[in-house]
Image (cartoon, rainbow, N blue to C red; front, side, top):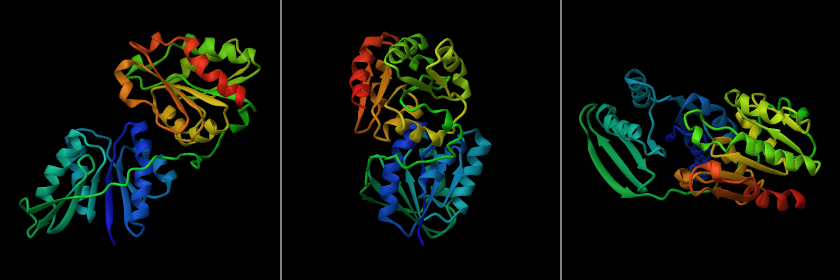
Length: 304
């Protein structure tokens, strides 16, 4: 039986985007064991997709963790390794594994160039012999509409609401549309008799509290949901508005109408899906006005 390793570390949006292609790969090789090398925080997504035999942990730490990961890969009997990360770290793995791989054959797939590199080693040391040939990668759109988690606190969800995702990684504060603008947008929705639900991690607690303060039509669920809850909360909503962050990408992959707010620096990482509207600022994301978002949002909530 073939045993295939997929290298995909993150970020969250990138991991979610890759899942459609990995599902297609699984359908092409239904009898192969599929393993995912990724950060531990992405294990729940991999488990929810349901195509992986298991996950190997790689949090991209220092030399000790790098050696542990390389040793684990070399000893696990993989016949195929797919590099979906295309990072400097993944390229290091490829170079080192060629030296430390045991006798036999393993195949490394470069998904960017769509080339298969077959390494044949007669000894457990040395670089072995390499043969390169083209390979087809079945790129496919990700559909997260069937992803479920425990659904804790779903009883807090109102019947008709718009979902706000106002946070993002603490390392990239420039991606955050000002919370005051989200507040203005929430006020307009409240005047229409609609609720707003706010999702995020505990790192976005301040945003959730600011939006809920003085607004009884805003339901603050920051810190109450699991990552895998995002698709179902999005599907129950009338529409989604979010920053350039993983949960926004996950919402877009459900098919629910999603507005993504981006500054010029992140124009390449826009939301992808059948029903999305990406608003890209000419400069910082704070230049996006509430009116711009409202023009896209209002027709959707009126139709819903």
